[in-house]
Amino acid sequence: MIYRDLGRTGFKVSEIGLGGEYLEGKDSRTVKAVVDRAMAGGVNILDCFMSNPEVRSNLGRALEGRREKMCVQGHLRSVWKDGQYGRTLELGEVKAHFEDLLARFRTDYIDIGVIHLIDGEEDFNAVFQGDILAYALSLKDKGVIRKLGLSSHNPVWALKAAKSGLLDMLLFSINPAYDVLSEKSPRPRALQSDLFDGVPLDNGINRVREELYRYCAQAGIGITAMKCLGAGMLLSESATPFSRAMTARQCIRYALDRPAVSSVLIGMQSEAEVEDCLAYESTPPEETDYSFVFASQPRFRMDGRCMYCNHCLPCSAKINIAQVSKYLDIALLSGAASPTLREHYRALEHRAGECMECGRCEKNCPFHVPIVKRMKKAAELFE
Image (cartoon, rainbow, N blue to C red):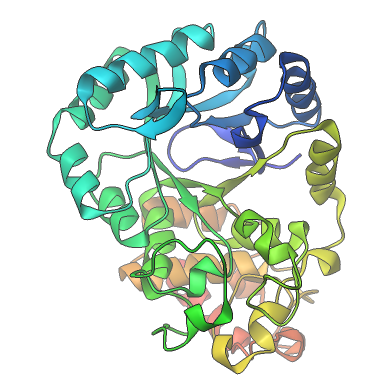
């Protein structure tokens, strides 16, 4: 398992994480088996947005005796009413259901308290101008939550939340289809290809999402990714909006390649599904390559823009071209390289200044990126 820094939180999290959604309705034995196999495979981050008391209790029992080994994302304003999941803006309900989460997880702290599902202006204003944010910050001051996060599917409000300066991380929906949707589109239940007609894109990707990813990387706000499989639609030949279906491992790699993303949280409901997700770590790069999604269709073409897919490799100088490009783009978007970004760059084993200008990478790149020129620019900026 590969572990990544979750922004500035100080947590190192597994790049494959456990999304708890599909454990709802499973018996305690199944939940424990899934958690056991995930942790045995190195998974150390779990998201529990679910308010269902039974699944919370099952997860608490599964973690008993090893709670400290799992980074838990627990949500504020996710509630259980009349036997159903729901969301609330009532502070009393927020408090009651968060205290229920602590009790059922048999713990006195949650690693990351996530303000749940801010997708529009009304909820954003109610939280950021009201008492829910104050409550969350008080929990952080007391150490009841170690870090503060927020979940969203909408890049406009996620970016505004990130720029508040109050968040340590974001839980955000990321996949290649969502990245080329308009930020004004509702979150689709199906990905019909006409959703993408006439969508204004910036070099092939939604410009607000692009700014969100790079801002978070520059500011040290880690992202954990949800919905990377598009609820399975991207895996289906009949449901995908692209020329052909992707594999789960291509979807995982796409999300992990976005700036600031530390972990992809995947809903797993059986040991077999855990095994399949863990196999990502040993999958050859050519089997996780997703460049066909954007390279083969005029509507989604990204000529000249690095997608961080590393399809350009191997490099004669052994430079991690995608990582250098990622740092370069973040710095260019912000107008400067932050000390944190410079530190990450210096930690690279091979840097842009070592480029031999052989051009091998440019021949391999499906997006016709001027890589040699960009390596020179990165060397000027960082070295």
